[in-house]
Amino acid sequence: MRIPRLKLSLAAALAVTALTAAVAIAAPSGSSPIEQAASKSSTAASVKFDFVLSFSGGGSSIPGGKISLGGSGAVDSKHKAADFKLDLTSIAPLLSGATKGTPVPKSIEAIVVGNAAYVNFPALATQLGAKGKSWVKFDAAKLPKSLTGGVNPKTAGSLSPQQAIAALRSALSVHKVGSDNHGTHYHGSLDLSALVSLVPKAQQASAKAGLAKAGITKLPFDAWVGKQGFLSRFVVSVSVKATKSQPAVKISFAINLHDYNNPVNISAPPASQTVDGSKLLSSLAGLGGGK
Image (tube, rainbow, N blue to C red; front, side, top):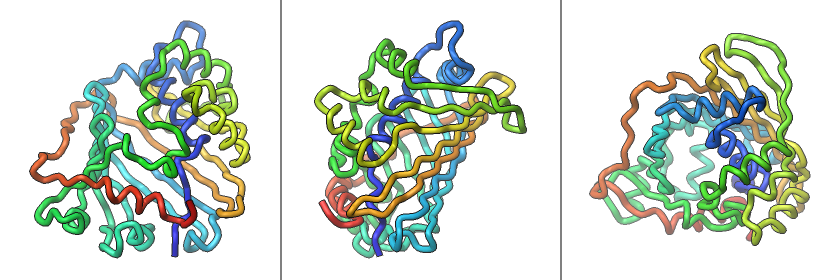
């Protein structure tokens, strides 16, 4: 049984880039409520969160037609660090293919510091020849292109505010829905074709081709702004059309944001407890088969 090749496709990469830009830039007077809330949220020293990521469809590659991953954690914005725990119960059997049969725990902790991600997985560290160590390190710069859709992960942080503002303004539309226990509810959409300019010029052609292949032009989302003006909830859903090598799949992501500016303490694990996981990346790229 194999997981469908759910790459970090152009649509996903552009959405993440645009939303990151919205949080990273200061919103000028008269901008949308979402941009204003994103701007205020970006000034917070820290935030805690919980989330659910779901995949449905995917043919026989997804047992029962749907899998969901839940987790919670915190972000230290000042030091560009995050720490979260992920519930892997629903996909542990599938992930064993990437770990060459090494049992996958029901839950796992990950720490992200800069471009490096550290996963607390002693059994995997042992498989890599580092018995007694607990953490496996993955460098985003070493991710195979098959996992990133050809987009360089390091370019997401190289955008100028002027580029981000121009692209975001032309791509974002928002309207108010109402209010509930999460705060004021807004619905909006991102015109993904307008965001191609956020991708480096050398990758824009492949970015456009990726959008066309996925059959995605707009990314609808719902966002909530709490009483204090911070983003409190964000929900996005995207459907990727079927191709010759992969059945159609729907990806949904919902995150709740809370406890802004509460102290958090996040740091990379000690080097003495860490092993490089680079050679596992090719195995991850091979999930789902094909090239």
